[in-house]
Length: 272
Image 1 (cartoon, one colour):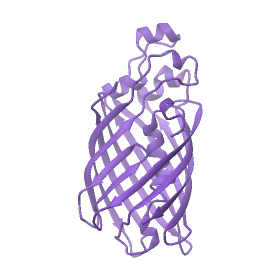
Image 2 (tube, rainbow, N blue to C red):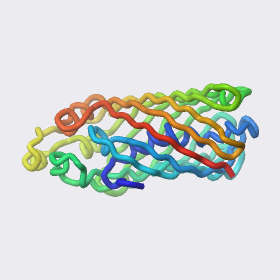
Image 3 (cartoon, one colour):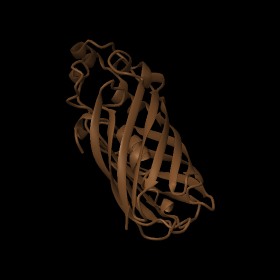
Image 4 (tube, helix red, strand yellow):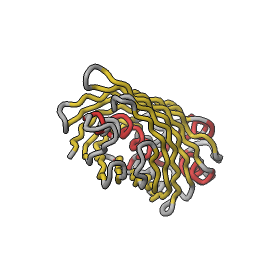
């Protein structure tokens, strides 16, 4: 992944996978059966904030894929976020989740770069979701939530994310998707990524700030998916997110960055 070490790639993972990765990796659009989930692999490319709250952009190329070991059970990778669905159920998905949350170091902003580096973190947790599929597999909606907690690195906090998605047919084969989501961050997580310690303030000139737990952001996105054949799909879209509460009030964002974040990307996948 290009420039990965300079980003909080959780934002990139969530956004790019929603916009260009998991979006075009909806293999049900191949209309094999309404519930069949084949294995697939793809690549997405997108523009995203250099770090969460940055007003600068970076470009990344990242993989995504899914290996199915049943009609519904699967192992899924979306950039740096992995899940294992253990349920063989038409509607419910649940299982363990893990991710590598990249830290913040060597950023382009000369002031933010003076703050202490944040080491990347391995996080473990779980997810659950419910999906309703219509007679046309492109006609579907889902709601879900996930939890991950840092087990290594500088972040020993946790986040809880909730989301809702809606897909609808466009023409004979294409599909249009809409996504809404939000993330809650624990006090340890928010402190790691948004606080400015007295030492950091002395080095950077930013105001001292102690970030508390709370809702970190809200996100909205729109995605368009176009099958090219029974095995190849392309897609693209954009996501807008707005940082809230202490994430938005942090001097890292309010003085040097932007509470409004934009991600857009394209992707291609192949089912097998």
